[in-house]
Length: 109
Image 1 (cartoon, rainbow, N blue to C red):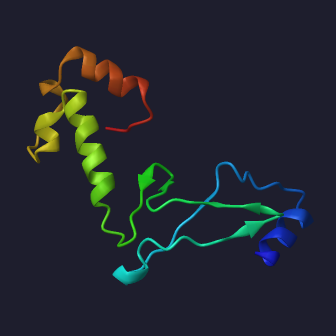
Image 2: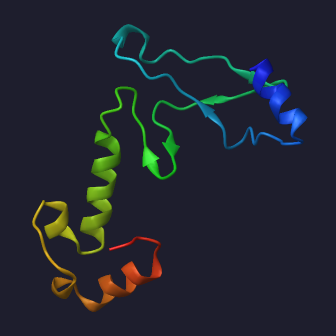
Image 3: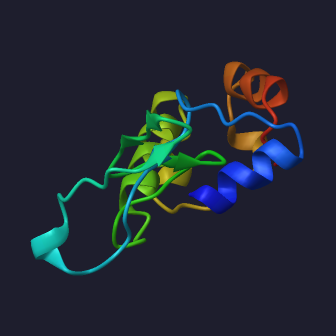
């Protein structure tokens, strides 16, 4: 962590400790809930077992199950349940509200 702190200071950057979390990816179940004590500039980083990085929810086995479950739930919420169930449909099959929502997001279809 000293290397990271030096790099940040050298480039006049500040790490947002409130938004930064620590986690551990491994398959050793005995250590699955172990929290690391990582300090950056005298501030302890919070531990999160399944952090989100660039919109993707990560889990300790990197199976992406939690992420896929949350995407499926969001799709069902917005009326895209056929796509969430693996059915192939075109944009013509979506209702106007769903098309408006898709147009308002950064989701590229």
